[in-house]
Length: 174
Ligand SMILES: [Zn+2]
Image (cartoon, rainbow, N blue to C red; front, side, top):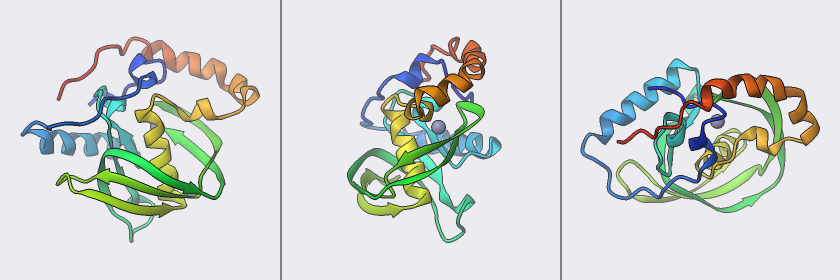
């Protein structure tokens, strides 16, 4: 699968709520995981592979062996608390890392692969990944959350990435 890069209009748009999923969705999902692992990613949102739907995948076990991998369908943050600042990167913005301030702890409601509604609390690293991915689904990138001054320092790198990203205008149908 192709990763949609910074500059693609699909990354600036709020994705659509997931309704019924097609029968071949499990295969699509496996390809999506493979794409994420190939690029050493820990999370990947649907619109990062061109799909205009409100879901993302994450594999926290890459960071913490006691954790798990999961698909988060129609995720919604119910509560957030605490503040944490840490460095982030993004498969859609290669080679750029910046510190981003986010909530330390969140309570999330989402549907899992079986479409059961789950409510669960996350803190620290997984909470950060989830907030980063939900931002994607709402058309927000981590570079939108840094100061204008810091952003000006990476402006030329972003423009370079956008040369390809701006050509990725076609959505992918699943
Ligand atoms: Zn990202």
